Image 1: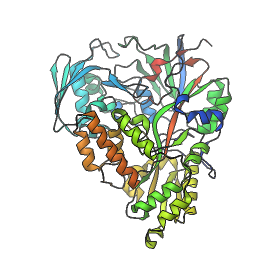
Image 2: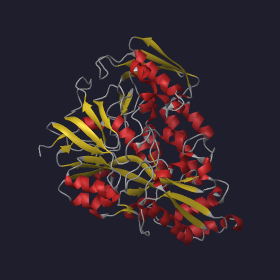
Image 3: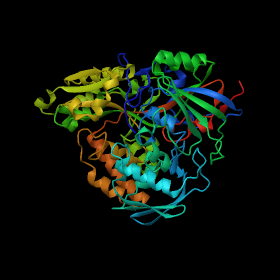
Image 4: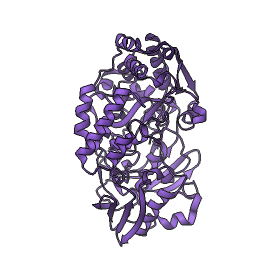
Length: 549
């Protein structure tokens, strides 16, 4: 799910820095940065490990989580840990496919019914078997728990019932052909019913932890220091190597401390190491930095349609004037490339062919088009152009650089523009709290969806009620509802293209910004982790192994 994040210091869907534009993002560029722009240069899985390792230290860049309860988990840090402990009915693979997991198969006998066959031989960490009762309880908990993050994905569900020893049936109020795929996110997580009923609100806390079926089990949580997960030797999926016995997840958030820890070997690995340290890491023999594909976008959200951003030509002119290519090279160390659409290719899913064709027809190299932008603004009423446009970014290196670049673009085409930099720790309030946001016109975000499905992305960003539709945009609501209820993949894909075309032509409610790669640093002792952005729902640590060094 999208949330504030730091690549630079390490947070989760929001970033920041400072520099005057020519591009934007950590230092470095160079050949490694240029290579990251090419999909051929990206790595999905790092080389497989060969030996066993007793213990490793892995840093979670966003800091210590508040809980490890998967129902409350929708951000980089908790998901990076939980993905190795708690499993879902379906799994998202590192190549952005959805495959059977705790559910081995499904049937869709009619548009409003989904029937799931459950995998046999799966046990919780206490050795007790996973049952249909556990699955039904977990799904109902997701649907009804007011404080959970995934209940909205159950909005079309009428009932969930055990219909056999290893069978669960979900009946819908109306057809929903996104629901099934969403079970590859924590909307489909399975926990032990009796553990949750026994511990209640204490689940997910340091003294209680969780009870799941994954390859690593909750061992201990030293508040302020680390969370330890230990290998579960009774795990059902023997195809995963699971060569690391124990993982200490640490919580460093300071850029220099993280980089120093990686270079010294005190930290064995991390996802999304500080951008400011990429040049050092690329040059170091202490380990290896890999870049992989990712469903990540750095973008601007239209938060207020009552001001100048309510005018489509103003939005399109600003988008044209921004040096997205330079920002991707300078601020994001060559690992951000201009996106053709608001949705990025890793999320195209069932609509890959259709969306790729449309994206190719509107692709841009991201260089600023100042004259064209000025020409477009010439037809905008003077009173609209006089309105001040405000952009809020978190106080972090990358986002500050990004903000400076956007202000520079606005200044060049004659727009009245104000850049506000706020503390990173409170930035999420601008995204989620209308009172904090006020009449702010634009917000920065680094966005990722629940699953590799364009309908999930669009539902979160551009449909009424979507978490990242801060301006209340309604332009694709009808098309979206039709697509959700369409069974045929091709027909549904055509509807997705219609929606993307409308969003692109209006440049609303998000700008087409930058698509990012995902970085993983593996110290010299370990290898095997996916380089692709798959660590938020997939048991990535089960791929780790030793290098023999």
